[in-house]
Length: 185
Image 1 (cartoon, rainbow, N blue to C red):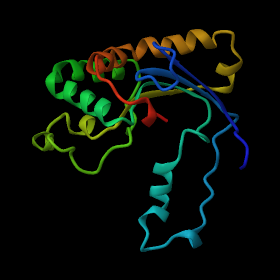
Image 2: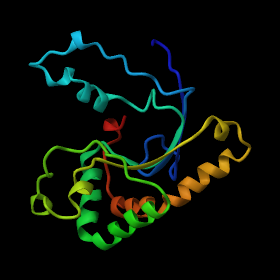
Image 3: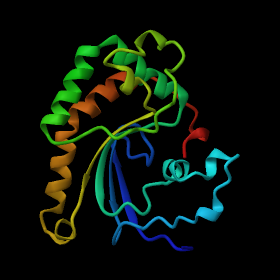
Image 4: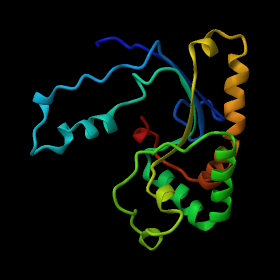
């Protein structure tokens, strides 16, 4: 489609659209069905496979939801987050436990295929999946009823409160890390 089918808002501590650690609200009428044409697959080009296309999809077409966490692209930020996970695994496990208790699961987070350089010794450990991520996010779907409810702001605040351990962990990890703003999307 040539037109945007959703609206969204990013809420951050700094007010910058892509500041690390955010609450992201996405509203869209319904999830978009993926148009799959087997004729477009080139066996010699893995980027044409359905799994590759799904990985490239943005949140557009995903329906209505609230996401909270760290959608990181800058290498210094990703590295700092990973270092904090290894530096304080107990705190990271506490984050995972609190999120699970709140019914929030970490998304796949644009994982890398191999263990990142410098973390190979963690490949078989409990931290491996967290270290392979580049985005650390949780998400809760919103229903049509949620969207028209006067309690929507409270629901968004509740999701943010439930995800606060993730935000606090990430903000500690990224404190003082500087990146060039030209790379942010």
